[in-house]
Image (spheres, rainbow, N blue to C red):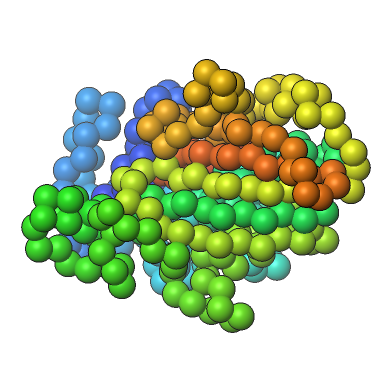
Length: 330
């Protein structure tokens, strides 16, 4: 099996390689592709040096799979061309997420919907993935009526330049402004640009992607905040159910959920934090308590590594699913 990685020098692209190595996935060939400024760069993988190739060479070989994390414009231009050659693409941009022709996949939730006809598969937004990993088992048992979520998103979600802005500001050095305000010692209640109704694109992604993957009838509203944390996103979530629930039974259900780790011992100061989630593939949930102001409702706190399960890990898991279910090309 041959694999192409597009956007290989970016933060998510490098995580693709790391996760493939950790999972010991075997490909007969892995080729890296990136923008012109990265051509001929060397990246180590499995004790070998891989050379970054020009995007112009992407169609010279026949790949079985491709992982894309290079933005919507690149995906829109190159993914259909690869798909025509029989390659299965998992795309980490927002390009195909809301397309009616393409599936938006979290393997633990809707991986079973994939078929041999799916050649371009969309990876959800990082905040959506970790939210749905917790909402899905709860919705299956108690039927969610409404969700109010506030996200606290790290600078790595924006990319390398944002990480550099935070780093330089923390050292009181001149920094190129990626955000409209300083991020060090600050919170910015804006992730992405503003769109309809005063919501940002990030907030609308969470709403629309949740409806597409989980249930179009769920009422959901979101506020996305950028915080001065390098990596891992956090979410404060209020959920109202149609059905009654017992809190301890609900916690036991989450504890049994694959890919979710319950950390909920507040009296011992144990709850999820970005530092404890860093480098992990699980989604962490805690601070679970009833909302005493409204029937069948609760509050909880979710943390996940936005570069791992929120991006690269989920993408690689999709390829694993395709391989294990013989949906690869022969």
